[in-house]
Length: 205
Length: 173
Ligand SMILES: Cc1ncc(C[n+]2csc(CCOP(=O)(O)OP(=O)(O)O)c2C)c(N)n1
Image (tube, each protein chain N blue to C red):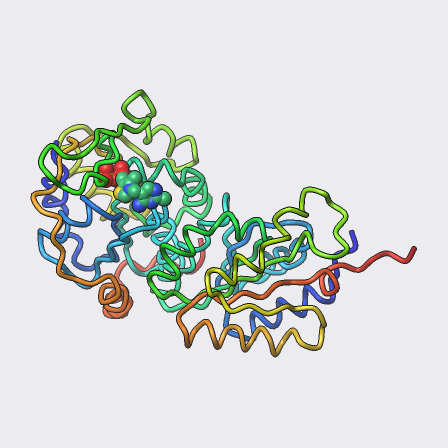
């Protein structure tokens, strides 16, 4: 399964969500499908994408929040999974692209990246870790149909959900992104303001 | 436990007064009453963290969504959060009100607090984070309001160091 196909499958559904992605390959591929101001690309601070998603989800219970994460980034903030589980905002969806490597350190030169594998390549099961952290709805998916169904279900749903997608360790076609970090940082809150109250789920969880 | 209830309430009221609606916390002794107050306040979202750095992300998300926040941590929690502060808050111009208990300074009796205490200030200074001390009850309200104002206008972290003299009431010998 390729990450770009996964992103393509959910892209139309991201239109009225607050979307937070990690840096590198995930950000570049989402961008390549068409930038929208409700996408925030966290270009550094590995691990904190899910924490940003939690902050938005708690502050805006009416707004669906989708976090696009990576195995290396999640491994850097495993404690954050327990915090997600603890407050379990019903409007938060955590999608983790597990390619079993730290892909984006290579910079995209063909064959130029170091294969720095993560612990998911030797047996760590992030869906099981998420369940163990207390996220009841957490599953591992290995093909595109399962991903599409699980991810769209999660986005439609009314419960904290984590979907870990086993994907190929493939570089994006390009890392080009013509949106400055600060431009993106300031357009994103404005986009959140424009997202209407849709899936109101009440105040604090 | 001689943590000052009165002054904890003063600090809490000042945070509320400056518009804080979400508090993330990882407690230590001096923070127990502040965390309890946040927990008992139905109008406050309290997020108990596993590690302080998460709080930088949570406050960022809440800021994007229009909420004012404060982060309660001890100085070692601040040291724990440095990459989040550099690579998110400073890089992306995010306002943070860092409420940091200043352990390991004059009067410290816990040996384990003394190392980090020596360079908390210099680390804040190295990061260009404006800081002030909260030591006397009468300065709490004003300094918290001013720290929040500066964080919001400069879109940067601002730190208030909670001092022993404010947070701790030495039992009469
Ligand atoms: C604290 C820190 N350490 C190392 C890096 C270098 N780095 C940038 S992207 C990346 C890999 C991220 O891996 P993952 O989350 O699995 O996403 P992938 O690139 O595989 O899609 C690393 C290690 C960094 N940005 N920050």
